[in-house]
Image: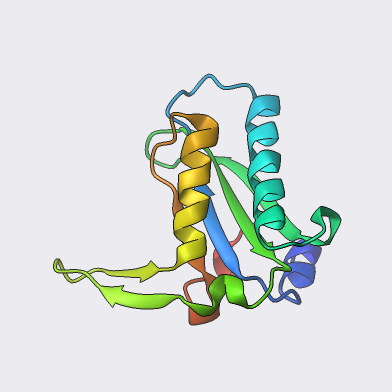
Length: 136
């Protein structure tokens, strides 16, 4: 049986998937959420989107290996220019990555907001890096 939230989320044209981490484990949840809203508001401002019209889903979870708290998010409602310049690139070690100005700007902003971000992963979804079957 499908979870209702998954059904509703699958109907949205999501543009970005992000994983947001924290170096310090003892950051209060309220502070983590405030940092998320600061990032989301900055993103909406960059693209001239009225913040209540920005589409987003935020999920907090514990890492499987280390147990560290982190966020996963989906973002939509931005102009198409936000993902237009995304390019899939193959690294020298054979792995694949995505080069996108919005992803780089989000990563830099998160690092400035937290001052101690660990690894942040941003992916534009228009080139198939995400499946709703993984969002459980």
